[in-house]
Image (cartoon, rainbow, N blue to C red; front, top):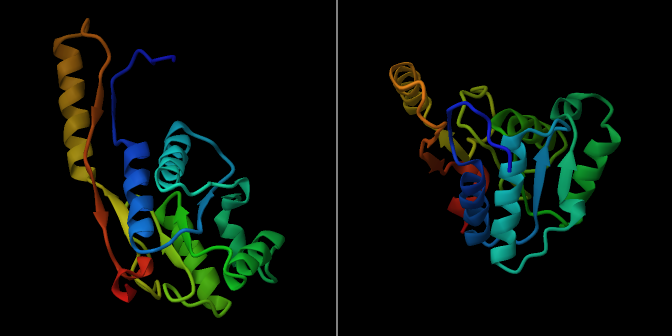
Length: 192
């Protein structure tokens, strides 16, 4: 394991994705897919790892067909791309009950795509995001997400820089800020 020589201020992406996926499982979902882009960062890999861990803890096999890696903005193209058609087929054939999206913008793209194609959220499929960034107010359903506390992240980043300036020889540190599950309509918790 290679550790960079720099301090890291962030969130525990793996644990946060585990909590988010557990939430869907607790709501009765078993066929849960993961949607992310094609670029692989440590944060994305950790979020995918947390998603898989939650499934495995419930003896759900996270099949390779459940991982969807593509640019979600392509869902907005007309006519539907092959990936969009495949997503619709998974929903309509009941192969997928829920999507864990790598971030809120991917989740918003997926929500708009579903609604445009007659798929009701959360009745037909549930969608959750990550980060709790301000999303378009016109999103037809409020988004369940993991909130990153941006104020706490900023505070810790500044505090860590000041500590580093005052103690330049101290070993590099990982400072993790807590995330919060924000439950809204898109997960279907009110349908339970």
